[in-house]
Image 1 (tube, rainbow, N blue to C red):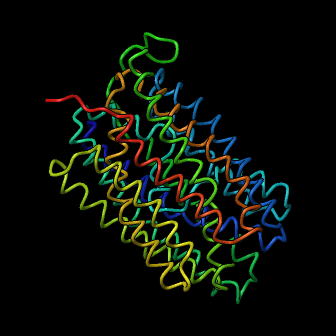
Image 2: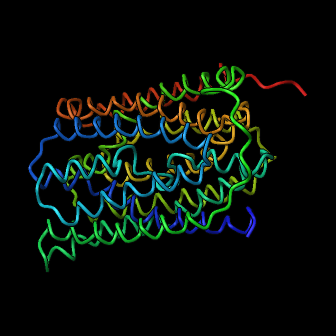
Length: 391
């Protein structure tokens, strides 16, 4: 197989990963609440997970520059396999929290959650030098992950039925087992992916040219990451508390949002060349933030769900463009280090998730109002910091 023909294995990996990881990300704050942890402690656990993923992203990015991004993906994929197995096997709260940290169950539960892991963006950028092809490949992967995320939300919704036969806690644990099997399939799929020959690394970390460009992207993502961290990880629990719903309703809302994300990602791949990549990145990021505020202030779950669906549409359309823009000014030998530094800046900023429990304790909509403002500003910053060369 060559790089192009092996791309289907990356698609298989992202499809199975999306189902498993989406279930776990949606389930873990609800599961911790069932285990009698309060909002503040859940927020602290999320922040701890973020801190661990920062170190993981940094190390795997630099490892990928020297040894190949495929191997970064393999290591990143093996950790959730171990973590999900522990979640199925253990009833000890300390082991459960440890498993969630190992698995990296942090960040949002949006349609792209199953797509990104250390090495993914660098691998696509390395294998496909043309920006048009990069956007199309990333759009294809976003569409696939978003579509298969629907089944992750269905898994969460099925907890309601399964719990009638085995009890609530065991229902979650059996579903963690299913997620573990899916993550293992993703791990095996990565083995068959081909990667273009890596250029020899000539710098210890990255070239000055690459750092000058990625530092601007990092500043933008710090602002966006603060907004993401303070709001999105608690979203499934917020819906349940705000509108007095159960896991089934949460699963349905996210399932429909994943479908809209998949459709908008497909449109993104078809419309590349008709829109400016920088403008799309800026506008969709800002609108995502403002729609988060609108969702937080919605009086009914129907209106809130509709606002979140709109947000998912803009996220699905903008994400492939932002991913391509983020590596536009990076030297080919620095993709891993640059994308890991970018990921680290975003994840460090998402340590703001430690505040989410406190803010929700004060007022349920407050984390999403603050988070939306930060995201809206980060979209504007794309136009301020990233300058395109005149043709």
